[in-house]
Amino acid sequence: MAQQSNQPIIILKEGSSRTRGRDAQAMNLMAARAVAEAVRTTLGPKGMDKMLVDSLGDVVITNDGVTILKEMDIEHPAAKMIVEIAKTQDDEVGDGTTTAVVLAGELLKRSEGLLDQDVHPTVIASGYRQAATKARDILNNLAFDISLKDEALLKEFAVTAMTGKGAEAVGEKLADIIVRAIKAVVDENGKVDVDDIKVEKKVGGTIGDSELIEGIVIDKERIHPNMPKTVKNAKIALLDTPMEIEKTEIDAKIEITSPDQLQSFLDQEEKMLKDMVEKIKKVGANVVFCQKGVDDLVQHYLAKNGIMAARRVKESDLKKLAKSTGARVSTSIDELTKDDLGAAGLVEERKIGDESMIFVEKCKNPKAVSMILRGGTEHVVDELDRAVHDALRVVGVVVEDKKYVVGGGACEVELALRLKEFAATVGGREQLAIEAFAEAMEVIPRTLAENAGLDPIDTLVSLRSKHEGKGAMKTAGINVFTGEAVDMKKEKVVEPLRVKTQAVSGASEAAVMILRIDDVIAASKLSGGHGAPGMGPGGMGEMDMGM
Image (cartoon, rainbow, N blue to C red):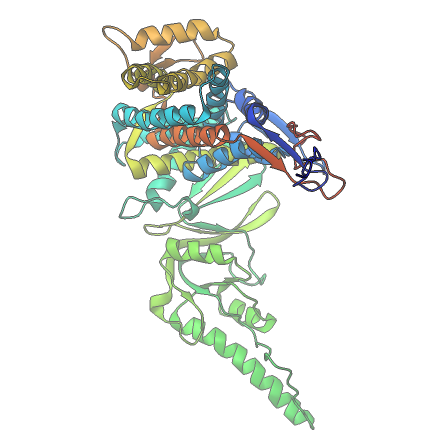
């Protein structure tokens, strides 16, 4: 019988690393929690901002969770999963990105204690899933109804979403603009496409100079100085065909043997261009937006006929113009009819800052509108844009779902209490996981208190006492400005139901996925083998949070 060799069997390439069991779990939990801790201080009205500097020296100043995580140079694979939660939350709802990430970090932190007690990861995962399902049911029961007519309350959603993002000084004015914009673009089925609201950022003036245009603003100028600057009662033609003589797709050669032939050729070309303008004039259009190029001669004839025109207009802007003015985009000037034209009360070229823009406004029932955001510096305008984006999405979501809950940590405290009651009915080791999930919910009010400079323990005790016993107030949350536990519904601190349900779902799913990993096999790097991105030589996690 052959002697058995003690030589190790190598199945991975040189430079690869493998970490398994508790080491792999500890490494992933540590990396994911590090990401959550990085954004935790930005939560709430009193949250702090982060300054992110990239390799080129460009600066971003924000407290928007998803923006911070996108800008951070994160390499660790488990940490990237946490970033994905924020991205999904932003895509689905537009707000609550920091909440989702902080919840995921706390769920993983609580799971460490259970792993130390030898509770198997699959048991924890099962408990977390049950708790997340129950949490969504509880949230649905806590939700209130709202309709599109509750304009004053809709403004409060915008104010809540923008609080802590540098727009508080003119929050009421911006909230009014945002609600009017959403009401303009909501369709007959109650759906809201925020892409129908065009946001233009212009440095100069103050945040209070921001305005809503009931129509579309095009970042273009008139193409000829003799064209009218202002057109009232505009009839608008939208073209995605060039207003010039197109070159043939194949190489062609025209042989001209005499000056007469050359003149005849030029005359014919001029006639074709003149006919284009005549056709536009014939259908009654006095404003033209063209997606392609416009010949110099066509510009001259358009100006001569008092027709305003802009060229190289983006396709997305043409579509918004169509929704706003009721026009149809034409692919051929020959096929253009009066029915294809759109209408606007006023089309005017105006200067904002040092740039000229064309305003198409006073449209009847526009289904696409524009917002112009102003601010003293580029960083102020950029942060205002992020705040407005969140607020638009939040108001859009609450209009679609017609359901909302209160903020200020009220939902999370109520969830913690109800989930603890639910855990007692489950039994087994899953009960421990559901209790851990319930305790993790309290990270939101605790963080709100910490970021406001309040005592988190006193705050949580005060909140629990309001939510329990006789005369329990389910809407009691923390007023971060006074430190008291008050009725958040009366304070009008409100959020869409979907913000909370998506945050709970995203955080629990990511936590379960990370918990179930017990083996990390990292391929060697091309440059010399130190494991996969974010993995140290021995497979231990390093998180590159360089910016």
